[in-house]
Amino acid sequence: MHDDGLDGLVWAKTDFMGGVMIRRFFLGAIILLLAGTAFAQKADALDLYRKGRYAEAVAVCEQEIKVNPNNIDSYCVLCWSLIRNRQYAQAEQYALEARKKNATDIRLIESVGEARYYQGKNNGALEMFQLYVTNAPMSAGDYSWAYYYMGEIYVRQAKYEHADIAYSMAVHVNPSKALFWTRCGYAREMTSSYQSALDAYNKALELDAAQVEAVRGKERCASRLR
Image 1 (tube, rainbow, N blue to C red):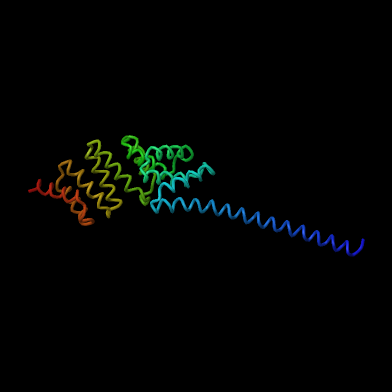
Image 2 (image 1 turned 120 degrees about the vertical axis):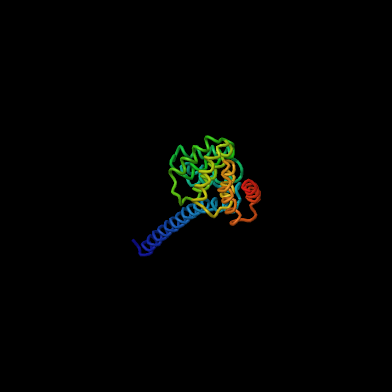
C-alpha cells in the first residue's frame, strides 16, 4: 500500500473518531440540559408558591407529576398552592391521590386536613389534624396550626372546652402568635372562664395591639369581672 493511501486511512479514522467524540459531547450536554431543566422546574414550583404565584406553581407541579407520577414533593407543593388559591376540592383530591402512594407523609396528611377544613368537612378535617399531631414532630412548621384548626372546628361545633385545650396547645407550641391567643381567649370566654380569657386576650394584645377581636373580648371579660 502506498504511503498516501495509508495516510488517508489514518486521517479518515481520525475524522471518524473525532465525529463520534463530538456527538457524544453534544449528547451528554443535552442530557445535562434536560436534567437541569427538570431540576429547575421543581425548584421553580416551590419558588412560585413562595412568591404567591399559585396558579403558575400548580401548572408546573401538574407537569412534573405527568413526567413522574411518584414525585411526592410535587404533590405537596401542588396541594399547598391549590389551598392558597382557594381550590380546596382539587387540593383534597390530589392529596388523597398522593396518599395512595405515600400514606405517612405528614405534609399530605396536613393538606387533606386543611382542604377539608375550608370545605366545612369538620369531622374529616379533625381526623387528619389529629393524625398529623400524632405523627409530626413539634418542630414541624404546621404543628401549632394543626391545633389552631382543631380549635376552630371545635368552636364550630360549640365544644368550647375542647377548643380551649386545642388553642392552649397551639399557644404552647407557638406562644408568639397573637391570633392563637385571641382565639384561646374566646374559647375560654365561652366557658365563662373570664379571668383566664382576659389573660389570653391581654397576651394577644401584647403581641399585636391591632387584634380587634382581642380588644372586644377584653372589654367583655373585664365587664363580667367587675
